Image 1 (cartoon, helix red, strand yellow):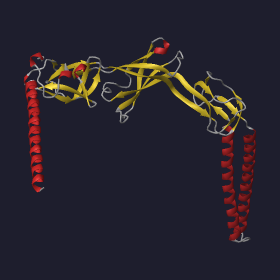
Image 2: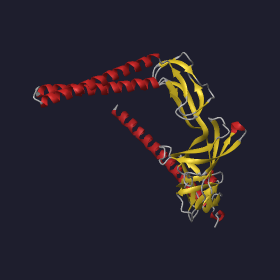
Image 3: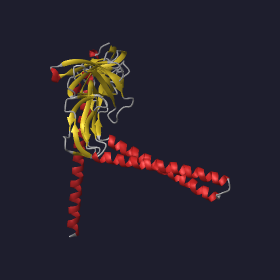
Length: 372
């Protein structure tokens, strides 16, 4: 029995050894084929288009989409609770700063003001009486007719009357402010574009009654990437195209550029404003075209030379033997033809401008196609 088991173990060992030898030879053949293919690939120059970065002058033309909104707009709310007694304006009406738009019921507030005014007058009377009493007792004290304690008592009474007068004055001012809050007024010139309440409705304090906008000037807020902000300045002209008005074109200007970039997008919020003497409707879709300042000696490459890899912009660069490697780029302004290179190239490299789909790093290209 032991002899039989020993033979089985020997047989299994021989089979395992044979399998290992076969597997090793197969693996070795595969590796040799890979190395041979790689050597063949490196030795054979792949036909691609080559070129060099160029230094040139550019005038960036930038395009952004947005809407043309009012320069100023706000919702106007009641300062106090109350029933809407009278509404003086409707949607579309022009209003001026300080104009009364609506009036809330004033019966209760008027009564509160009268009561507060009466309390204030009583406090004034009490203070005058306390001051006269104190003056009289001070004179009696000087003649030795009353003790100092009596004078101190009247002095405390005078101070107490002063404090009550201040409290009454504050209460009166609060009631007068509340009464004034029953008149809902426009904080600035504009047009009423929303009226939320009708006469008879009960409005809570802070609830918007109207929405008012100033459309004499319209603005579009755009976000300019940091790679394109160079050359854009306050005062630059901008062409604004309104598709809803038959592709009508307006001329505006850059009026504000945020001094700090929005993160993580790394864009700068920019306002473009345009006068609106004709009263064009606000809130419409707009396409903003900006012409930035001319920049000279800018390093550029053809935009079609850029290859995206792992969300990075790259370009194939060939060395003096024609072997290509990837180079990660930092790109600024781009249009349909060129891309501005901010970092990643010095300017004297040979780059692949066409046929990148044939390449992998380490491939060889025909340098005779390269420009001087």
